[in-house]
Image 1 (cartoon, rainbow, N blue to C red):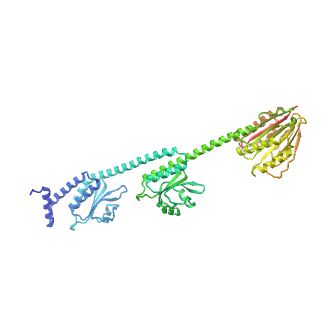
Image 2 (cartoon, rainbow, N blue to C red; image 1 turned 60 degrees about the horizontal axis):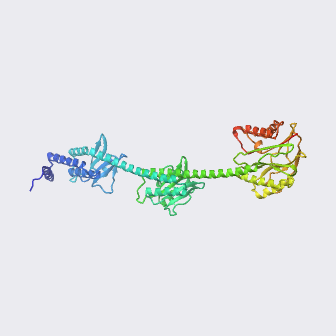
Image 3 (cartoon, helix red, strand yellow; image 1 turned 90 degrees about the horizontal axis):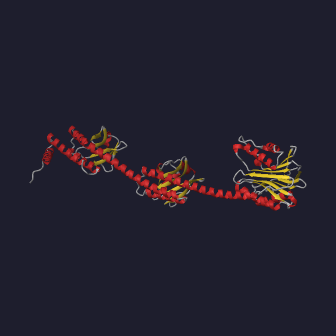
Length: 572
């Protein structure tokens, strides 16, 4: 039989002495050195970190004949967690806050493992199997073990940290690829339903959940905009209390961390585990709810970051769709307004009429692209001329459409009846065909050049100004209420004889009510002053004097209403 190696011979001799109750120091020291040699070999082996720690612990337990033991490693939070153990209960405590708490694990002897004066691990042993107490030499052996294990344990911690960082980096790279891909799809889509479905499906796939829902803010609260896997478990509309709670969420929040509420209970019953806000600054535009993972694993910080980034992308895509829709709608409205403006401009007379003994001029400046003011010159039999100026309630396209109707009616009725009868018939037509809040103010006049007489009716309009050659001014007020307001409205007819040099000016309230930067109206007195200032000129001079005065008065304040002026000057 071959002779045993020296190491085993020493070990057999030591075991015999121990069975006899003796332990020669020399043989014990030799055994400890052999154990340290085994420990060093094990710590520098190619095994995994968990296997190395477990094997190292077995060597120490065998050498000191301990009944149980544990190797605890310090984590980032400062607590020590069991990484290798023998003899500890499987369902027992697995961590402690400091070395002083080692007794709670059933450890009788502990030794810190230090690196650069910092405790990175603890080696702990339970009572010996033969009930002998630990001596100073046993503690010295443990310190030697701790010194040998310090560098490998630190390297293992660094390796473990690097491995976790690499895993997290791989997850980040994967998430970035996903976010890049979905970003291209989101920017390529201009349909809100497609965007909602895409984002909801991406959340389900990336977070590995079976259900998700998207809620959007509305006038009624938060309404269900898209869902996957809810099976009718979550209500489509959140009540006021739930809306207030959802409004307060600013970061991805686990459902179980929400304040107690009926909404939280509904989310838990529906199997929801996470709420992700859709925020734009201080405005909450909605949120996602995400179900529990099938594996039961908790969501990581990387999952929170991914969900929040995806929510921001979804919000940006939805806002882009909204803006695109607004641009399309604006373009459509601009086209309609341009058409309405062209129609309205076509209703104005193409040129000024020529009337013996009289000069006429007119101009209309809409406050918006399409206005509600109108003027017209209508030739009548026997050389007579009908003049009209009108103002429709409201602004923009609706006012323009109503004015087109008034224009057509005036053209059809002019010359067929007296101005009084024309006003009555036009009032009845508008009363029966327009909404109660729609009306028209109108001055309709017929000029007989031979008799130099102007016969008129004023239907609720700004009374025309009459400025005599000598500067005396008066107003043409005969008439009645605005057209279209009253079913049984009554009107009276007036007339005025015009001598050479007399001036009649018809204006809309855009002239009299024009406001300065300080908010003061132009007023009747300034209108009369502008007309008197052009006494020696023609009808065009009077018009330019008045329009220029109004525009200068408004200045940077700009227009607040359409401005229309029609002037009639009696020549010598």
